Image 1 (cartoon, rainbow, N blue to C red):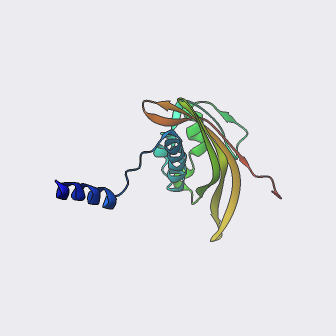
Image 2: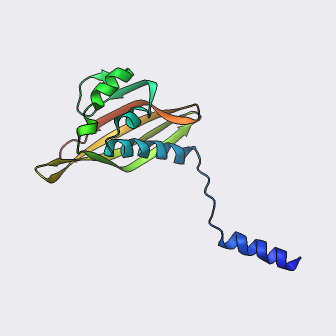
Image 3: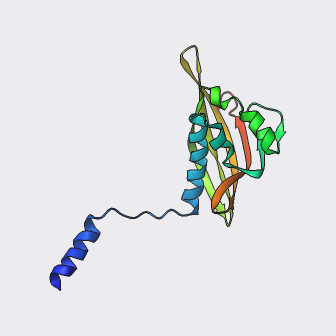
Length: 147
């Protein structure tokens, strides 16, 4: 009996910890999935992260995009882009089946072989639908010069 107990304790001590993600981590992962799809220029995966009722206010457009077709139009250049994005400091709040992620990200474009950073601010509002956190509202704006 003592050997069995020692074996169980040894197994528990040496086994990797099982991490259980909660809603906040899941929302963070959803935001990072957006950045990953954008950076890998995967238009279909990127668009699949938006809810069918999503509204998007893009960094470089004066058009409020409130349909899948208009959001697709905004991102149509992603597959041929060299631009990447990295999420920086951000905060996530989960409010039941709705969550808000706000923070900053930096887009990096290649121009004449050089990296050109374009810092921006974002807010994502997610809704949990069919077990997935999907973007309902996305606002992005350039960081003002001198900030």
